[in-house]
View (cartoon, rainbow, N blue to C red):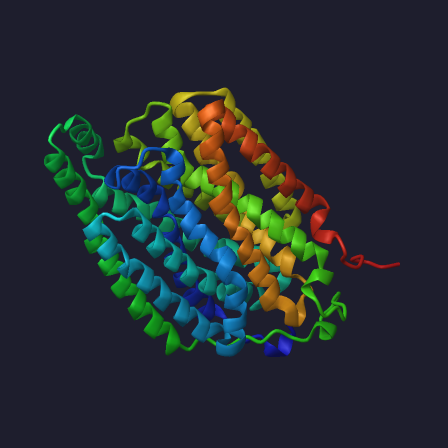
Amino acid sequence: MSKDTRPASYTTSIVIIGALFFIFGFVTWLNGTLIPFLKLACDLHSDAQALLVTFAFYMAYFFLAIPSSMILEKTGFKNGMSLGLAVMAGGALLFIPAATSRTFSLFLTGLFVQGMGLSLLQTASNPYISVIGPLESAASRISIMGICNKVAGAISPLILGAIVLKGASEIEHQIQVATDPAQRTQLLEELSHRVILPYGIMAAVLVLLAIMIRYSTLPEIETAPEDSMPGSSSRKSIFQHPHTLLGALCIFVYVGVEVMAGDVISIYGKAIGISLDEAKNFTSYTLWSMVAGYVIGIITIPRWISQERALAISAVVGMLFGGMAYLSDGYLSIAFIALLGFANALMWPAIFPLAIDGLGTLTKIGSALLIMGIAGGALIPQVYARLSVSMGPPSAFFWIVLPCYCYILFYALKGHRVGRPPLNPA
């Protein structure tokens, strides 16, 4: 964007957007707890069924990203964020009848609606934080947002897990040994009802935040015409920007490996013999690992390292930790999967600004395409669930994350420049 449309002081805006990213993280990373919880409460028989939690949640981004862009054209960024929070509240409210009836499909509907709201919220907030300051420091600003996101994500599964999975191993045993169908049904219903209070509170908080954002001092940001931006061209279609299309694929594989490390880790741990009482907390380990990565990003980008170089290093580190998780077992394998959070931390902050650079008036639709890439979090865990049956969890995990990190490395080294004019033309 042009300098004359950027607020002179944007500290307040960053604080407000930081609060929104905290909400993203809190809601998104509840999935790591919901997967084993719903597998137990809804009496599911396979990991593939349980991982429909991530499928329903992340596929919402694919279907709603472009409509979200169209909505933002009408509402602007601030009102769009407020609407997104309200939609998320609606999704949280659906958990109440879902828990009362113990209907898995209704839980999935609630997750899809929450994903719809987050799609709108992220389609607005990610380009907002990217363009509100200098592009070269965008990764640093997004890293600050990432800390807000991942601190919330580290806390949320602990809070929800303490409420809905308290004494999980004992409850699981009672359900398995119950011979009276009525007693078994009662145990499952009591477990299912545990989500009613936390999701009711969540809905109320989201409505309150929607009202606060609507009447906040958050300034509206307008993107400048492409021909007024350095390095921009007169291209009128997003499909004339291959670096953005390749970036959407990069987001797809990145979110896939992020969900593998953050949400699938609990299912993985249980599959290799670790009790549910312990496995329910593994998502938090991954998220704290990501926080450490974000801190490094804030310190180093762009002062000592460019965002594309940080992305390349992160991809290599991901390959290394993925390989070590494959070669080890037990708690050591879990530790290396959690460390993938460290490798993944700087990926979104680097990919997003690189992929929308130079889009000008196409920034909203470009952002929407990148948000569609979040569907990787829906599809890649499903591939894992099916491969793990035939290959075993360690092999399936490794042979999924390795090619993903290879593509991320390609985008860091070359993909983000495809179709772009040279930085220093002769």
